[in-house]
Length: 217
Image 1 (tube, one colour):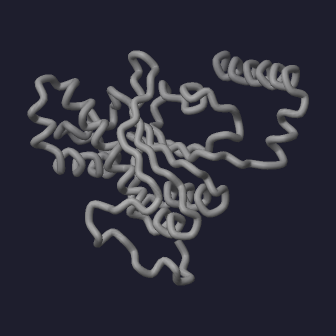
Image 2 (cartoon, helix red, strand yellow; image 1 turned 90 degrees about the vertical axis):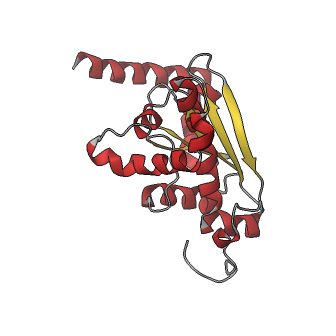
Image 3 (tube, rainbow, N blue to C red; image 1 turned 135 degrees about the vertical axis):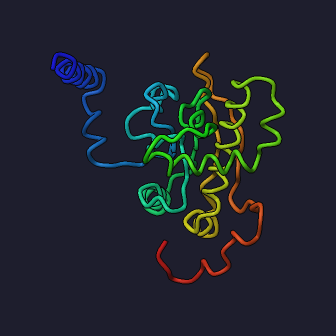
């Protein structure tokens, strides 16, 4: 209980500090939410989006899951995405992975982890697409980190394949999509991929041709 109570004490101290620095800080947050960014990141506790980007409350809309995945059947992710794009009108969506990701490491093995196998299957597919390139690398760490970079790129492409993004690209000329990888060793983010509104996908079968019609999603 002591650790839990410590969290509550720190919360109160933080709230007092924010009011001392800016008496209207919380009033502004209550009345409006206008973030420019949607962050899709890993659930790893060592990668807090607000701290590593030095953003303040209200500036970044956040969704996190194991290995920062964009899965086309994940209604949680898709709901966050649609709200961020259609309601909040975010200008940028960032998929941020991190080197040494445990989810990616697990996906590269043949070990069964139970329920999480269903989730890791999506990363195994990324490995399968790029196996030849990955296996040419000399060390296990290099192989894992290259798959982490490739996985981030694949998830950005998965965003672009959604009707949510494609429709917004037509109607609002945004958002821009970005793939980043955070390095735990030095705290630096390394960009991997940028997709601008209207970017061509890797195959035309993923490009919808009737998004001007009135339809959900």
